[in-house]
Amino acid sequence: MTGSNKARREPDGNSWRLAVYDTSALVLLLWIVHGLDRVLPAELVALLGIRPLAADGLLRVFTAPFIHIDLPHLVSNSLALLPLGVISLRYSRWLAGEAMVTALLVSGAITWLFGGAGTLHCGASGLVFGLIGFLIANGMFRRSIGAFLLAVLVALVYGGALQTVLPLPGVRASGISWPMHLGGLLGGLLTAFHLRRTQR
Image (tube, rainbow, N blue to C red):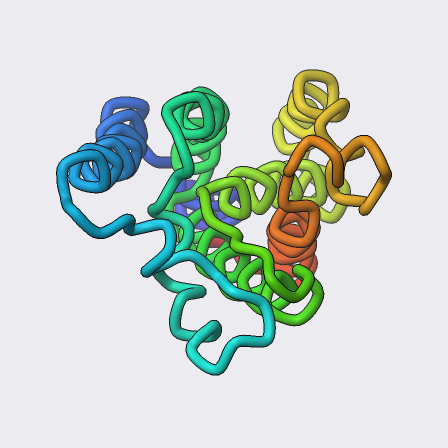
């Protein structure tokens, strides 16, 4: 009975091997889609990216995270998604999945509403910022030394990127989708708060 109670105090730990496998599969999918985008006659960015306030924009919420404008864009998101995905899935596969789904939905909705008329938004950065927000907030809301230390590590490594969630002049000039970053971050924060007492 004691062992059973102890097992319930922390979210379900996933094996490192499975966490690496799942995250690698997701990143590989991004690269496969990008490869198809390079060889297909139609540009997938134009077909599947989010066009703010467009009638079909909400449907593209589910496709835009898998499309990237160019190779540097894909490499940047892949290099961030790999460690964040592995760490999150190793901590809890269920909670990480909830965070990614929520981040996808919230980032897509905010981008569609506030992205700006005539712009086009795509990329997995909403998922990246969703995991950043989830890991940092999870360490704040849970009474766990491990979760807190993990939050500190993520804040130290990725904290500088949080300035891109605001429509600052430099962010706008660089072409970064601040609403996608902001929405992803909010999605991760909301997930951590909502599921703060969930022991799965």
